[in-house]
Image 1: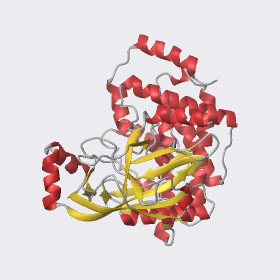
Image 2: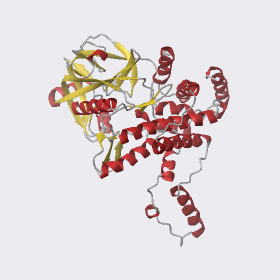
Image 3: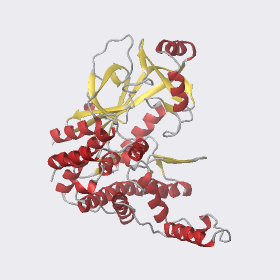
Length: 441
């Protein structure tokens, strides 16, 4: 089992990345599950001066690492960035990083690569709350606090990267010395049953001519199970008075309720990422339960037409919200436009491809799991086979389109590539024959 899990992680995340241990404060709920010296915490940074022992783990979301530990996986979340121009710098025992105050990430306020101390405290609180309520959550271990942190402030990642492209490392370090502000930064530790995310395995189903590689009825059954399990887990949290993490902003919603925050294993699924979680106390927060449910359908979902299915099946859309149709201008054309809009808003949408049929199966499962409070079970053998096969197909899809190994997700990048890159049919035929030989049956 361990060997298979390692192979899946290697396919999905590529080779392991390096991290180091530095001095820091640990606040632990369960010290027995912390694998390091209690005075040390992990970090991923450039080290222009320090020589520290390297350790290795699989990347998770680009700012975290996971590795096998006991019967599960130890996760060190928000410990920096493994590589690249924006990688924080650790120098003279000080963490040098950046602060985004109007980002389109999480709450909009981000210590680049890390968490604010408040975020870490909030997440460990809600993770522990979910764990104590016996909800399908990851197990909390504690948080780590970096003792000395300096930041440079930017509104968002676009401004940050424009700045970094124009500066050398020495120039950046000089700015930290002159203009850097003291700040707090923290990381979080948990024990997971695994770290494979529901969204990342769905990419495997986008492989060209998937119907020649996989039994589509088995795929649909698996997706109904996966969707029902994730949505049922969300419903359990809502029934316990917990929002997974959704807030209203002037420009829309910020949410943690998406498939990237659901872990999938060989037998069940779990919820993770609680830094935006909150208690349901008001009527407005009650309404956010519905938003979280529909966000789960389409946010971070690489399968096509998920947002169209939300529009089609969302129950509270009324005719008053439909765009106005001017029949006088072009009556016949307008009539057909109106008819199509009516179909969408009346709960009708016909999948236009086998890939959209797969999307519909996933969402059918979500509707069942959330509304009926049950999971649409399938055989354990099918769950195992699908998880292994989808990890293989995702890796091969990345190879097919030349995407970086270990890149966990990137639906817009992939969709653009699939639209503009013409694949060689002879090569694709050979690849499909090869895959038929290695996929589980």
